[in-house]
Image (cartoon, rainbow, N blue to C red; front, side):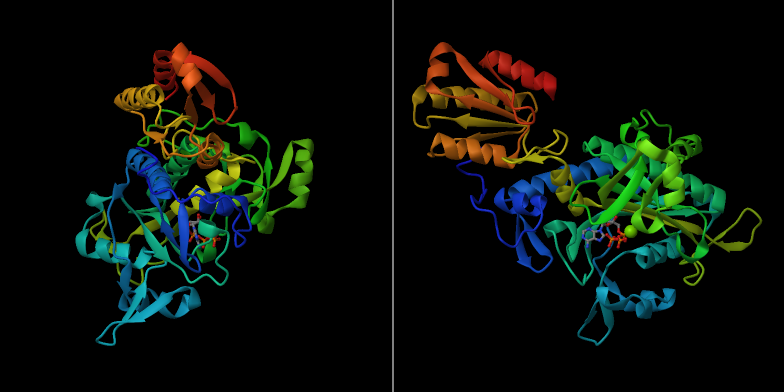
Length: 438
Ligand code: ATP
Ligand code: MG
């Protein structure tokens, strides 16, 4: 992609409305623009990152055995009257009337809709287990939308819903999501710590929030430092027993402020980390809470109708864009982990219009692309300083700097955005190095 053609409205100044660094950088790097309070337009650079994140989430959900569907954003109020939540949900739910004066709503979550799909289409325990998920827009009329996409009113969520015949199998579905979440966040270069959360009226301990540590996080958190160093499971067999993995991860102290136990924490002493965190995911077992009132029954092994056990599993896909920036930036801008970067490599042409530089850039661009990497080439007629600043701001992992002196010697400069390390290399060596790094 040539930057002269790419829609990238960067800003030099810090926008005054942004209170935290990710929001500032997302506006400055031309990733998003606010449409109205808590509702954003995603511009090309932001859209690329959002899609990369969604694809990692999708890949790990699929590996764990969940199946992707798409449910409507606009839902019928009738279903919510059946579950009893129509009156309970409160002003966060955007309620709409259609032309026939029927109650509709913009979905803040999809338990009712997915339970409705299930009850009309699954009849026997033999068809279980099932786990259905979508990656789709939600609307919650938050009292205080803030921090850009971190707490929006419209936001992109991955929401999965599991259906099982009994508690034990439902727990396995829960464990599958627990492990998939560990892997999902690690693939984005994040350390996400599972913390026990409120499990509501049904009790039990099957509810965890996944929290990314960042100075600007909304909640205070405490955890054992081992959790920050622990490698996530590889080559997971999702059919096998995942309980040992979950037990291992939950055997260390980790708590949000509300759940913090100073006595237990004191025993950990110097190993305790106290920090701030951002909730990026939440998994939750709720048994028959919806299947009972909505009659989502199947025929059990004994021949009797029985309501299924359910769980729901959310990931804040659009919030993750902000969370990743909170954890990966410096004074000059964003530093994308390669797995979510909007492009892998940025080429800076220091002398656009100079035939030797233009040719070298075109050759590099083509060769890097042929190796399966996404490239953004700054071919604008701009000062070098502007190009350097913009390239640092948008945070691509690698920069290739092409100038007339180097090209005359047959070399270009390769810069690693994270370390700042620079080296002069031949064009072939750059291509090889980038391909190996990716
Ligand atoms: P919070 O406590 O942050 O309000 P929640 O408990 O209401 O979140 P869930 O219903 O568990 O959120 O939603 C699943 C995930 O969706 C959350 O873990 C979070 O990452 C994301 N999320 C929730 N609300 C928002 C929002 N207003 N803007 C962006 N992401 C959100
Ligand atoms: Mg939550």
